[in-house]
Amino acid sequence: IKESQSVVVLSSAWRLVDGHKRVIIDNLRSEGVSVISSTGIVPVGSTTADGQVIKTPAKARCVEIMQWLSQNGTCEGWIAIDDMDLWTAAGPAFRDHFVHTRPHFGITDADASQMVRLLASGAQRNGVAKKAQANGISSFQVPPELTLASLGAARPYRRKSGFMS
Image (tube, rainbow, N blue to C red; front, side, top):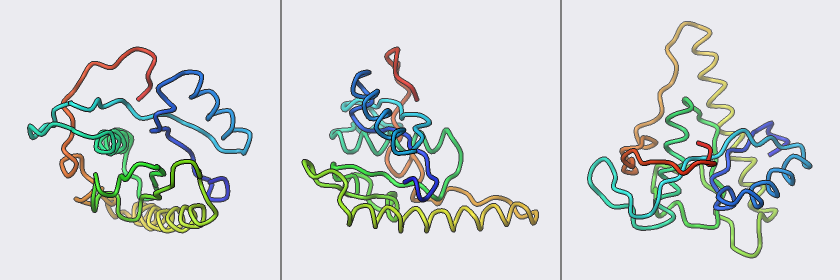
């Protein structure tokens, strides 16, 4: 992450407990990685805008990530790193954006290589978008497969205090 000059937005369950969140933020900072935010919370059992019920933690995590991306601007160079199978929950929305780790192993060398490759690819797409904007061409939009509708955006819900979005 540090080599790619990326920043972290926490979507991990670790963000839900202040002590755990502090541990992960401190560990990342000690490695020179900035944590800039965390995703909101979409509870399992929430109803999406199209009336579907979010039935799994993986689907909830996907919606949380897509909501954060939607609320914070277009970004091609993002990845989700998780031991939950977000690919199955999100399908093509996470194509070229997901690194599936294994529980109890953490991030392996192979995972790190995949992260670097995906971030470099996203940075290249971001660079093309910035160059186009500088030349008066409108910015790239979030591809259709990366919209909240493709995941079934959750209806608004009341957030518990102490959680960041």
